[in-house]
Image (cartoon, rainbow, N blue to C red):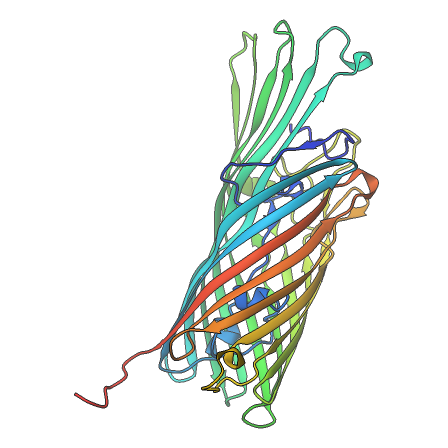
Length: 429
């Protein structure tokens, strides 16, 4: 139903001013572009967090990590991002800018070494707009020019509830309940210049939801009060996607009544891939934090490659296909002196990171990989562990080879992490 024009050299990508949650030609497949998880704390270190334990920030990438906290404190994190993308295919270029809310997360202690976290974050986004005019006389004959249009928008959001506990002051376990929901629309039009020919309009209107989960563990070995080595692991369950998918199609100058097909998405057996991750983090002298993560996600049985509304085939008979993805992330944090009372810049946390991702799909036989560099800093605010984090990411996805599209992104992350003590008795009345 959707005549995707990715394989055409004359593809024209148009900069958008609409309210897209994301903008990428690769978001045409499946449930769209899967967002990188984590707060600005994680993203400024390349996206690591499986082994991170830091009582100053909420780290929800591993449910077990939320026990790294003051037992009397509540914590809150609110983040936003601005994403600028530059697209290139052959000699054709385009740009786009998006501003989005990234997360809203709240965490509280429960009892002794246990904790709870609840939050809402974006999971995936759909945003694309392809247009192409066929003017070659050998193809159009006497029909006049034919305009092909394909565009889509929408998003899926994740709401989660995490609980965790620490045993023997070293071993932490956690579990997360996830609820995914969203609305995605995909439209495809074929418009003839001459009104004597029937133009066609069609697409999909999908309302989706799913319930999944995630488990995590961490083991921390302390060398002293300021240095430690932590190993972590996570496993995300494969999540079936339910909902409805209305497929509609109509043509002008037709005496036949327009037809709408209503399908149960669950009957198409589509699902989000399961994922396993491992990480290792090292803290040195209360100044340095270094972490490396590896994630393996299996999307091969997602069903997106054949399900109507999710699958994509091009006019050169190339199609998108779900595959197994591999991701490597590394990050480092440096704080000169957290307790310095003279120089503010010595209390700031400086971060840098790298990532490489093979992608959860391929275009025909071609992989769609991404890689990038991240930088960031946290500025301490007032007292306790309150802070304002700002960072940037420079990355690239895709290629200019094989008629593909290359994305170059410059993204800015910002978040406010709030930390305060509950039930603190005043010393003076």
